[in-house]
Amino acid sequence: MAAPKRLPVDPIAEAKRQWIAHGWEPAAAGMTAVTSIIRAQQLMFARIDTALRPFGLSFARYELLRLLGFTREGRMPMASAIARLQVHPTSVTNTVDRLARDGLVSREPHPGDGRAAMLVLTDTGRELVERATAALNSEVFEDPGLTDADTTELVRIIARFRKDAGDFTDPKPQPEPL
Image 1 (cartoon, helix red, strand yellow):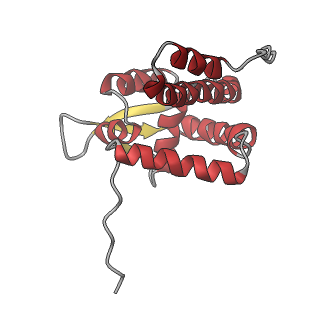
Image 2 (cartoon, one colour; image 1 turned 30 degrees about the horizontal axis):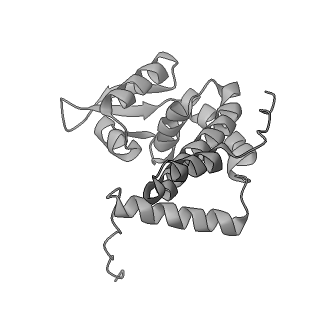
């Protein structure tokens, strides 16, 4: 894939200039932050898509396989996957359907709830997600395009934003083991 042609001016900086020129100065910094994050996400997804393309995986499919791969037995209730992935249940169902069609996961009845399904990672799915993880680690995660200090600071800022938006709470302190 050819690298996109570099623009002679930062379009987000130009948008900020236009925001201010049109009398929207109180919103200019926020607009700049939001559009910068969205553009950064686009750039990151382009790298992720390139790394996952040889495996026939989208990031959504990869995330579900990796989530199952992190469990001890390669299985979890569908409801737990939906909660952890933080996306609409229909999106998870569609992703599971495609993964099941490709033989990477299967559905089994939940042992304690006849209305629920268990998602089970197949051996083929486990092998694929391990290879895909190695590619993502080497091609994207080990060098996200930021210094270590910038990476740490960015994660800290975004985590604070997410927490303040109600995305998660700090875990309750656990008692010391006896």
